[in-house]
Image (cartoon, rainbow, N blue to C red):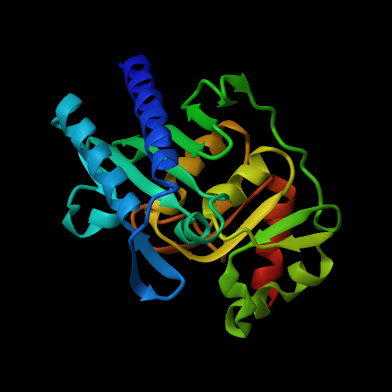
Length: 258
């Protein structure tokens, strides 16, 4: 069953990647959601609709949680639940045409079984199958180095330029080897999986922003929690600290002190 699911997801993602690239030269319709930096495009909506159609056609008993249709979602820890972020980093997609990704995950009874992050423009698929390791284009990924803060690059979400969010992390921001802002949860996590960065901190994410990445993180020994070190509430908006074990502990300890 898992092998069939994996094969279907990879095939669907390849189709979605081709679709996205075919739309890059067309007029993209952009709609503002909650702010000028929180937008959705017609491409987001079309990708999600395609995924939902595929899933309901092949797996009609499964539930789907999609970013653009979340208000209709009812089931959480029950049975097979697919989580879709059709374009993570939509602002990057519109403005840069890079540093965005398609993310999809499958959770069974609240436990992540399959997680995929597809870097469309680099044609690179990162994925994990629970208990079978994490991969990049079918090459197995190694666990990233477990460095300390002073030897690490840290990715922050853009909200940390606002003082109220940044103050608890002042120690992190001044003592890390470097701070980066990518504007995409998927690419921030990919930087950890690739051993380039060693932590990512976000003040607020929604389930579709991180659930696929958690499946991959589990296979690489990467740990995660809320900002205060509590377990993540998987189906609710939440803060996120994700990184290699040593630096995750260092960040959480710093947050509690401040």
